[in-house]
Length: 414
Image 1: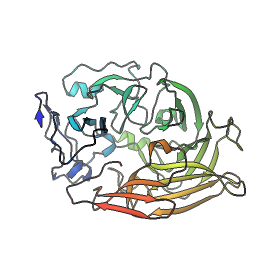
Image 2 (image 1 turned 90 degrees about the vertical axis):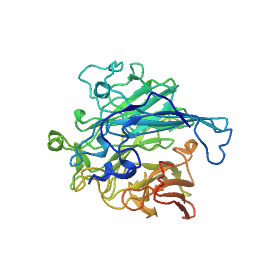
Image 3 (image 1 turned 180 degrees about the vertical axis):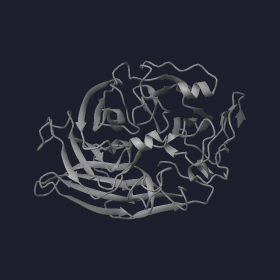
């Protein structure tokens, strides 16, 4: 492995994997911030990489650009840092990590601000949650009002993005790609809208082609969405905007015990045979569920029963609550993989547990998003916040296969 001489070191944060003395678990161990931007080429490989495996493997996550206060730091507020490995012809060509630039990050690094088509008063915080490739662009993503940030092939920030002038305002950390249509489905929120979220469809040209505003009784944090061939799902759950927390400078969302959690089905405008059956296009069908929080769904799909009944099946990781007593990050109870079956005819909901092992970051084959799946893959959670187990769940037989590695290992999102 050869290191190039463009490394940039800032602050006093512990390097990744170091044991930190911080009492904040989101600043310690494998979650300790990385304080250097590195480029390494011709990486050493143990074993063999398939020659057919070509492309870039990228991940994004919070990584403070300056040392934060451990007493008040919330994991979701750290500066975005994208890490990447480029693979080609059985070789690992390079590793890079780069902070995602906005005005504040660029100023901290002593650089000019990146191009930004948005007005100066537009919500701006670091795109620190996800990174995707879509319509020929690499986009770093975050939720809550800040726009995407476009990166180049070597992870440098190109521009704050408005999707060629088509994005109304906010985006999402987790849009869903429908492999059949090639379009992205987005459930966007922003506290400044009040009790409203916005459903967006981004066409294959990378421009927003459809929007729909959805009124809600509160202002929830909607981290992710799920789609079926006929619907996009809204997770209207009890983590709501809290002005008092915002004024105190902490994460402005917390758990509200008296808020009724619901899942909404929004008809897609490209559903087979026109609009979704049983629901007028302007209607959203709501289903009350037991209190919980969902960061990440595994998948959802439409189902017709033998007697012609219409259902939507949702598999997702269920947290019993979120940001109630633990305000530094998601660490309130045992997250498990559950299934909700929404009966469109009766309006009822049935719930079952697919796997009660603590886990998160569920994934399926990308070409099955929105369609019936059998296998799901998750990162199992061990002691503390370690992701030490890779899980494969067979949703047909109920069989779960797990691989657990030693303490120095940590699985990312499968």
